[in-house]
Length: 368
Image (cartoon, rainbow, N blue to C red; front, side, top):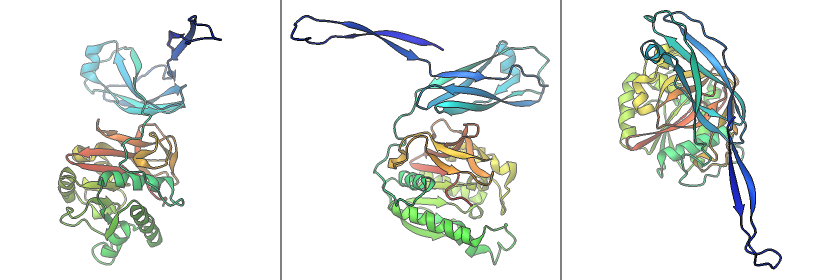
C-alpha cells in the first residue's frame, strides 16, 4: 500500500501571554484505501472461449469508491488483435468485495504464453446526493426504502410536473385477460397486482402526482409529465420509437422491473430470452445495454438520493425469489443509484438523461 507523508505547521498567535511564535510539525499520512486481496493464479483457455473470473478487493476506508479493472497483456499487439476484456464500473464499499470480470479469446487467436497485469483505476468517491434534489421529500413512515426510492426517482424524472400516467399490471390484466390475452402468461395473482397498484400509486401521490391509470401505452404520451411503465405485456417493440420521442422531447419516464426487454422482442410471457436481455436496440435512450436476473439484496451507493432520507449503504431491497431484475453495462453518463450486491456491477436503480428528458429505472419495488 502506498502512503504519502506531509508535514503540517501549526502557528498559534500567542501562548500563555507570550508574544513569541511557536511551531510544531505534525505528520499527516494519506493512505491508499484499496488493495487487491485475491485473484486467479493463472488462466488457461482455448481460442474462441470466454472465461469468467473474480477478483477480491478490500476497501479500508469508510466511504465508497468507484473503480475500473484495467487489464494489460505483456504482448500489446496480441491483445489488440485477439483478446477482449470486460469493461465494468464497480462500486467498492467499505470492507471486502468480489468483482466479476471476464476475458474473451478470438477464434483466430494463435497459441501463446502471456502475462496479464491487473490495475485498479480509481475515480473520486461520490459523497453528495446525486442526482441533486429539487425539493426535500417526506413520505409516510410505513413506506419501504424501495418505495421511497421509487417516489424520489419519479419526482426527479418529472422535474416540477404533477401529471403521471401509471401503466400497471392490474389494468393490463383487466383490459386483456378475457380477450386477446386469454393465452398470455401466466398472469400474476390478482391480489398481488392489486397490492402493487395500490402501493405504487400511493407513493406517487405522496410525491406530488395526480395519477391516471392505464393498462396499455396510448398513442401519445405528451399529455403527461411522467409515464411509469410497470406492465411488461403492455410493451411491444413498436412502442420503442414512441417512448424515445417522448423522452427526447422532455418527458419524464420511470421503467420498472423487466419492462426494458419487451421493447426488443414481442413476448406475452415472463421469458423474453436472450433477445430481450440484449438492450442494445434501446441503449441510446434507455442508458443500459444488458438486462439481468439476479438475487440477493441491493444497497444505495449515494447519500439521500433525490432528497429522500435514505442514507448511503442502506439496503433498499431484499431479493426473495432469485429472479430479481437489474441491468448492467450502463452508458457513461448514466448515474447508478443502487447496486445489487452480487458482483457489484449490476444496477438496481439508475438515472439517465436523454435529449431534454429524464429516465429513472428501478429493478424492483415490491416483493412478489
